[in-house]
Length: 361
Image (cartoon, rainbow, N blue to C red; front, top):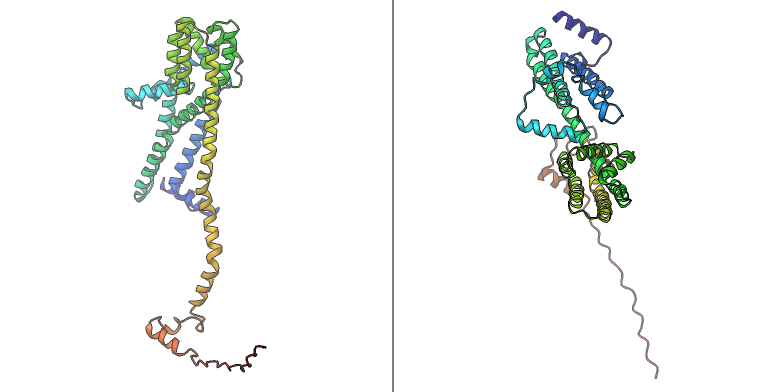
């Protein structure tokens, strides 16, 4: 194996490959990167643009996960506490991943991304020189730790984007819901109609469909409570509280829904204004670090060039340090004595005094 590694390194050196590419650690990083790309491609292929409801969700649930029957076995290798289990389940729901195999698929990805770099590092450490063993193992451990976080970061990013989309469509949803209720439709029929016409907010439409089905099976109050706990945002809790109070009291909710929609739009406008006001502060740091060095170079270059010419040993006429001279008090006194100090005062000749004119009588 050592001869194989040396042959590969010699071939890479012959073709002019950089020095970092000739190290076994670089091969581990490249192999891990290819594995990550394959996993990401598989994850992107698994995603579809269709709504994850009804038959499509049931068909996906029966497949056992992304790795088939091995998904549960791979996911079981990563332990988690009860708190982590609960929090990650809530994160999956907020990300829109309601499949029964979503958790197992994510943990299976984490296990594979964590073990593949360790396996490659151990294989290289066995057949590599002894002095490179610790470097290879440390590099493999760092790469494994970094890659194992990627699936969870993907879920976190998807959750953030989806919640932003849901909060952005609440104002339009409340307007449409108010129009349906003022037209005499029931809450269940209004939710169904609004969810089918929210083409610009598919995530919110999916949640409204879930809310409608839960209200048909049980009660609207329980469905709204589950909706608020599932999304866990202040805006969703306000909408759920408003609908639950209106359903409990039996009063008209059209005006309240319109007022709440205006409140959401005002809050979004204020948030946009706040972000716009923060932007100059955020831009000051890159401007400082990008333009300040260039300005300093332009302003300091002439003085630095003059100082370099002044201290140049090849220019003894302008360099006081030439010939092993020093800038001590003696050298300064000698320089002052050599100065032309013969000061000739200029004597001004007094001007002739003119006679004072006599005043006329």
